[in-house]
Image 1 (cartoon, rainbow, N blue to C red):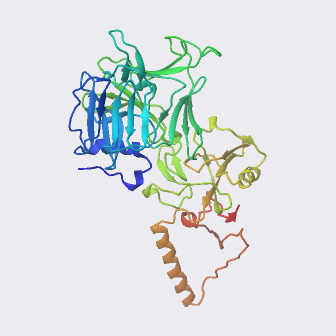
Image 2: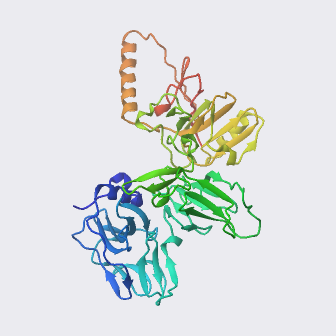
Image 3: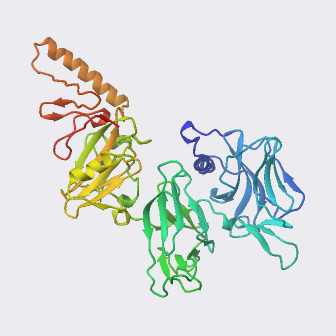
Length: 479
């Protein structure tokens, strides 16, 4: 049986690799424990999921070809008992699953295609390739005291393993490509990229060291992070004494299985340990759901201790979708959604401008077509403009905090909304036939206009008929 990527996952092939492992067990374990110069391998057309090529001495980890979407492959390292993917070679487009694709070792480990050439290479001049008992893929020189020329631990994807050193030159990237983790001069930073080609993206969470046993000194070199077998994520600078320790639930408990950290598709960094039968969650970098940048999705409202709803107070969250986000509003029509009692997740690390009024804060965003919204505090005067597509905001019991959000005209017109409009059309027809009990007024105001019903605010798509209790109006405009 071959594997096909569902249409919704075609742009996230790495995310699909994980789903592949869950539904297609690995049929074989690699018995080869080293690859020497002259080694070559091509995909086996009879393999439906994973073709093992190299294993560690304990049989816990395997390097091989993973078949994706029938015609593609990824060179991956997996944890054999759980079938969890731990590493893939490169972040470029996948190779084809065909006789044209070849993995070879000629001193460099190379994936190539006879038509397109080299797709990925380690660019080394080594003697052998082996997989360590910690899942680290190594290219070494010849001899009993062989030197490591290259290692996969220096090029992580979304996972860190025990004793793997994470440096300021490295980046963890979530499987959906939206979130990344990097080291700053004295902190661990978590970034989200809701806009294409925005590097490193928007900082949504920052962990600063406690500096209980040692301090981060300026001009004394960059910091590093490491997952300790003792059950903590440590931060170091030029020494073995950590400047920060984040303990896991099994901190310093003997007999705990192997550990790993993974940057998840929701932007959280999760720690796991292996119980010989399953991976158990042992650590969360962000414990509060509402501190995640998009925990309830675009235009979602995170209610602490309750869960998710929608900012417009009308759209049902049962589908998990409150609205749609996308490109900027330059030259496009949009609606405006206002709501009181909201703030941004982790506003403490966001830039702001002090404004004298909510109106001036809103105007700052209105005049900029690359601004998606703004949140204002009437108490402090802080105006936070949002320069990325609207995601989740947090509900607070403070009426002095207000949100101003641009929404696309027609955004969220799903089948339920279409059905609503059909029903309203039938109702209007009946009303007219009964003698015009209600008077409907419509004013056209050029490209900038709005729809009003007496006592009810008008709207577009899921933002129609916003309640006056926490929302004001939707205005249509064109920038």
